Amino acid sequence: MNKASLKILAGLTARSREVGREVRSHVLKKLSRQDLKKFLYFLREELRYNKVTVKLAQAPKKDIEAMFLSHFPSKDVDFAKEASIGAGYEITDGDDVIRMSVRSIIERTIGRIKQDL
Image (tube, rainbow, N blue to C red; front, side, top):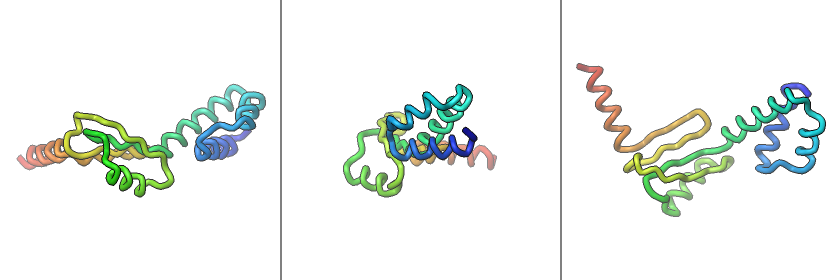
């Protein structure tokens, strides 16, 4: 199986959010070891890019949760608690990380002041 076909199969599998019996059977019986490794790599990448993680200092209220879900309608949104964030949030969407917290604002301000001196 060529690389493009493996990417398409991984993308379809990730979007369906489950590995169907037909896909399992095809992958285990028909793919060589090298192709299986490529398929699993592409599947991990697709799953990573179809997932958004939102870290907050405390569990989100329903309106905050609904706001984040509406911003990422085609992706799985996971909420995690992380006390070190303090007031604010951190969003991880694939390779992109957005930190909006009092701590990160203070750190950026201190960095700019140090550059200016």
